[in-house]
Length: 49
Image 1 (cartoon, rainbow, N blue to C red):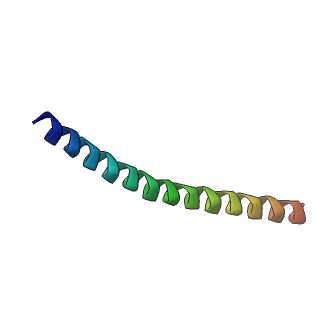
Image 2 (image 1 turned 45 degrees about the vertical axis):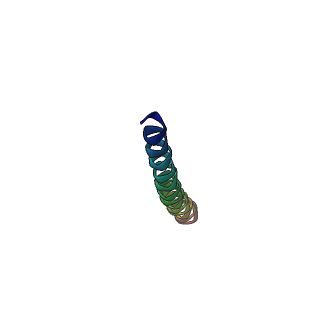
Image 3 (image 1 turned 90 degrees about the horizontal axis):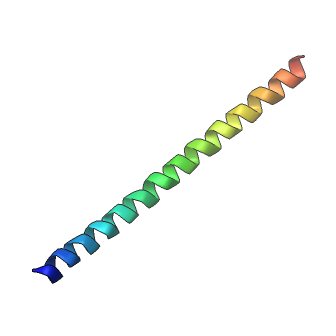
């Protein structure tokens, strides 16, 4: 019974880690997009002023 629960926890952990990786990648993409937009806006403001 203990071994079974351990396996279940391990499987859950694997799923969570996979989910974390995908969510992490998504968050990284969002950060990159945000930084790119911010840089673009700063450059436009610099040119305009």
